[in-house]
Image 1 (cartoon, rainbow, N blue to C red):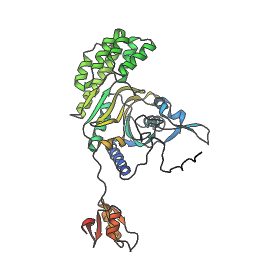
Image 2 (tube, rainbow, N blue to C red):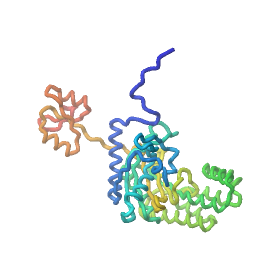
Image 3 (tube, one colour):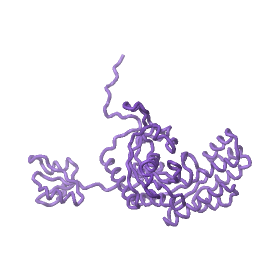
Length: 383
């Protein structure tokens, strides 16, 4: 019999990490950069709680994230509570219950951590950061375009290169399958085939709609070419309305952001459980994970809404490193006015804590590149 080794206090649950300097500061600065862009376009910040009652958080649009939600019991009320895995349902609740009389369109922004039940994508992503916007009230292509344009500006501000926006219309696939009248088992097999882009399986299960569905599978790629393919497919009237809305949204986005890189996949629907219109995923060259995603949905009380949620932690892996503050060591006796002037100029000041400290040795030890000597800034390695 052997004793268990002592518990290591640095050990964390799988999927959770400590963010250390300088990564933690870079992420915070990146979030604030995103929030400044949102605010400049009239989006007002709200801060929902990390924890809510389960019945509230997982109602309406929140039902789609129930499988990713941690639950626990409130010891005071004995009611089940839930940690948010996504902030969008909370914004919908705030709009309906706290801000129902605020004139529409209502523009709200948010940022904060979310907790996922599980993840198959590696360590560190069960606690994620989100920053996003919701545009509540209008239902039109120009509202959808505003959301995409805002995300494009955010990424340009952070100097992320090779950004592309992948548009889809999940309701188009649903409406087409509804028109086909498929029995539930066949419908399920057909949806799996479409999800996997398996044209052979679509041909087996698609019946009279097989040719149409296969053509839609091929109508994917750069926006204008994909839309031309989509326009050439004979679609039922209800489905054609959705394809035209997709085309109108592409036109509105391109008018607002000339040169933007757009792709279209008309039959992509995976992960869009509560969305009802045009949806978007954001990617960057060399980055496997999505930088963000969003789209159109029905908010509480079936109010039209659209939004996008960005992932600052992933964005900062795709962006050039943010500049850090230059650290200046202040020897004992440095006037407070001199220190305040340096901080106002953007430096980070690190003060000596006693008269006996060797300024150069302390500056080097504390990663300061400059030291104040005779009232002037002197490089540590040249002093």
